Structure formats: structure tokens, C-alpha cells
Image (cartoon, rainbow, N blue to C red; front, side, top):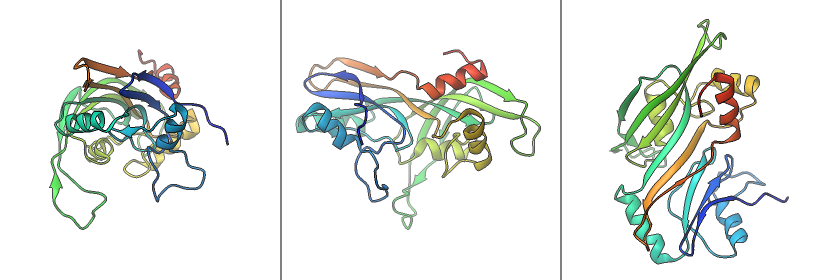
Length: 235
């Protein structure tokens, strides 16, 4: 099965950043079904050279994904990531009306080690950009409310944004693990949205070779654009 090449957001001789589509794995996993797509394999074939991921995006999340070519560059960026020197910004559409801004400071356990009760610090800053109230009774209430939220994680725990938003009772639409099925079904049936509405909008970092401070941004996905128009939100 032929696939479209990944959209390159930035590339030089040391690094490359792509706009990862929703539904694509970063690397091979035991959980993947037959016919699944993997960024590492396809991007290597597309560029004709090996690539090393600097960070991860969940399969259902789309947006900016950064890679390095040489091991030295990979190591430098990985150390910057661990030191909190790489800034990530996301957009999400969530259930309910969120506060105008705030911080979710809630430690998380490791999902890949359910027997380990030790929790890791996890902090997410958020800013509510827009809200909408629909005259549709998705649940027991006569109307349904949703928010467009800008998210800036200070830490990088597994599924941090999805778990943090569920913790404050504003799960991301399309989250089949931490979200609410009725709202997910409503978006599928009414708007044709079959994905997690979480988008990695930008990544800011210091170039490991030139020392230049950079910010790579991805264009707003088509499904987000359609929802902006439906809800009367400004892009």
C-alpha cells in the first residue's frame, strides 16, 4: 500500500522535523495491528538515511515531531529535552468550560509499570482560547459545552496531557482511554472526527550545532479547521 510522504517542516544536515499525521506510530510496537504505519521506517526510506527520534507523540496525536541524524546531535537534543530546555505547545479540544488559565500540578504513576506505586512529578500549564455551547443534549444536560485549550507541559510523562485533563474533568475529545464515550461518539457522528483532538502545535529548542534558538510550527490540521469554522472560533 502506497503512502504519502511526510510533510517536512524543517530540515538541515543535522536535524529534521515533520508534521506527524494522527494514527501513525513513531516506532514499532507490540500493540500495533497489521498494516500499521511507523514514522521511523517511512521517514528513513523517504530521506534515505537513518533518523533518531528526540521525543515521542502518541499514535493518535498529530503535529511537530523532531529527529536528529548523527548520534552526537541526538545526544545533545535528548539531554536538552531531559533538562526541560525544549518547549512543547499543544492545542486540544476538551469537554466542558475550562478556567481561563491555570496549572495542573498532579503527579502520575508510570502506566507501563502498574505495580510501581511511586508517582512522578507532572506539571501542565493551560490557557483557554475559546469556548462553545451547543444546543445538543449529548448527556443528561440540555446543552453541551466544549473548550479550545492551549497546553504547555512542563514535564513529559507518558500520556501526561490526556491524563491531566481527565483528572480535572475536562477530557480531550476522542480520547478512548481517559475520555467519555458519548462525547466522542457525538463528534464522530456529527463532525466526522475519528481521532484524538490533540495537536502538537510547536516545538522550541536551541539548535545543537549552530546554537540558534528555533521554533518549528505545524499548520492547523484540517479537522481542527473544520471545527473552528463550525464553532465560530478564530484561527
